[in-house]
Image 1 (cartoon, rainbow, N blue to C red):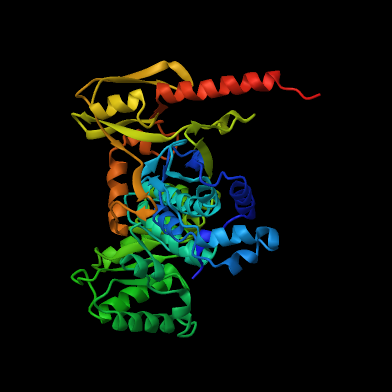
Image 2 (image 1 turned 60 degrees about the vertical axis):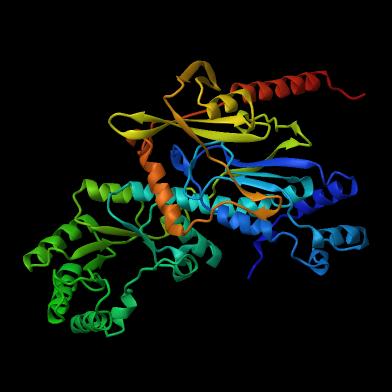
Length: 495
């Protein structure tokens, strides 16, 4: 299997050689992995991939010197290659849970480790998190477009086997009821789903009677399971649905069948056809027969189908989820925020690229609502152990201000709120720590988290923006670093 700890860019290792030879390799660095803007005007994104991040980090240093020689050749790299072959990760990692809902600029993963160890992890960690968070966030959008189940079946459109397998996992975490990918199912102990393709039907010859024979044989060989027949191979209304009803009845499948049964539409006017098919099924006493729809669906098409009154009980979505088709490139970045105890930042001509310095922690603040129960009210990112962090953890009254408009503020009185940290320690001194969660537990965590946001924050179009701020200490630290840097730049010149 590919060791994706080394799915990296060479410059991570050329920088590493400089750290190694200048004696800086053991300086303790803190890197934050975060994103700046959610795709498709989302209010937020969904975390997936931290399990693979942990595996990636703990696999670091398992390659032999001859592996490194393939991309770091020459005698000048000999000592560095020897060091790399014995280098294990010895630091700490804090990360959000898979299934967490995360807002821009909040650290999703925090790596605190000797500089060289943390630096060489940048590319593989971004590769993992950008892929899975793109898929998870898109799956969340698609699933929020309907109250009906959504199945993911985009493996054949995914960007390779790794993407198909872990993308399906991400989709299930973020709301999909199931996936067709068998490897995802086996690896995570969940069932995969699937019925038939058009080739199954045409293998009986392109005749109406061949379609009937295909349906009949499928039912015979899968009795006791969920039975879904694909009815649009030739003509949905004139033969497909009729042959399905005929085969179901001949094999004793009706509304009393315990395994569940239904038909699938994969082409044509899905709203019109589903309404017609529903009437035909009901007229034949098959009121519990489900209608499953596929055909290049996404959240916008699903929303429109339901607006038209389509009679669809569940959806299958492929490439829109598997490739995050509308926004295939997620924007996580990995930035140094502290070195040897000194907070640092990247200053840019683009204001959006200005980062928050220092070792951080994000708190989610919850208040009880008489009508809706426990509701998330704000996220605030602090420097670890700063004055606001201490107030929150002590349950004291505190006020947060909008970073871009300091006149906007919100006060939380003592005894009126609860809190939780979003970044949890998952690696301590190079060893895994903390709880492990199954795929279904991650999915349940996402579902529960989503339910604690208001409906206006969950909507797809023009969502109400959740309150996300930073502490006053973090704000002042950032401003002070910028002020000092700006003064130095203004005074700088060379002869």
